[in-house]
Image (cartoon, rainbow, N blue to C red; front, side, top):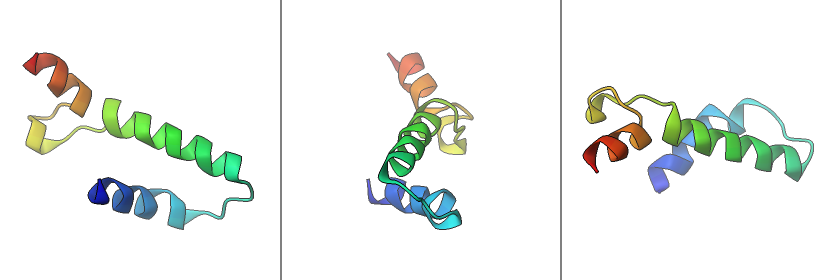
Length: 57
């Protein structure tokens, strides 16, 4: 969990100011989706976390 939030802050939060909490919340939700469904990882044989879990099941 700590690694995820650290990555989110570096890749999203610190790059732009957020005028409203709602904008920040939308960006966090979009990043969570990206992190789980689209971000490919070398440790998972080039699959996203969801693809890896689906393949393992």
